[in-house]
Amino acid sequence: MTIASERIAGVLLAGGQARRMGGGDKCLRTLGGETLLARAIRRLSGQVGRMVLNANGDPARFADYGLPVVADPVEGFAGPLAGVLAGLDWAAAQDGIEQPGVEWIVTVPTDAPAFPEDLVPRLAGTLEAEGAEIACASSGGRHHPVFGLWPVSLRGALREALIGRDVRKVDVFTADYRLAVVDWPVEPLDPFLNVNRPDELEAAERLLAG
Image 1 (cartoon, rainbow, N blue to C red):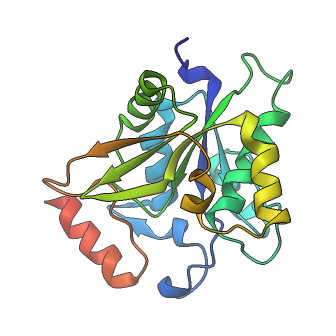
Image 2 (image 1 turned 90 degrees about the horizontal axis):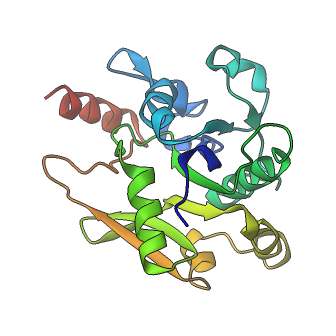
């Protein structure tokens, strides 16, 4: 059964503290005349049925973007798995609110300004073809598990792993499931390059301008 895009919610991950960027909201830094968050919304919007932003603190600072905002369900900045769980919880709560319901989420960190505009269809297609339970991206011989396609049905297991067993690494959690890995080329640039420091943001601006 084909995974329909309208049953997939995009979860934009921006829940970190951005220490290497100097603190604050990394997703509100600008690149090419738009914020990283605006860029992520633009690249993901055509691939999913709806979107939600995972961020901690006062959600009012994101009001201009018109997205629902969900905080990590675990205190202390527990990492990307907490953002995945926040997205799964939000998606589960959409059942009966809007039609069609959400059965899957795709997670995308907002500090990756060039992520593929065919990310979701390729993850979904490979997951189905391989009979997998979760799918993630890879490039240059490296897995990128935060770029993942997750069934909403996993939220209970993830909550138990995150809160009950203190699991923090995405690949530790996914190791217990059938994982489909979808590879992208790194030329002319790695689509999963991310920006953690001001100099990396400047370098990404030059690369994308070129």
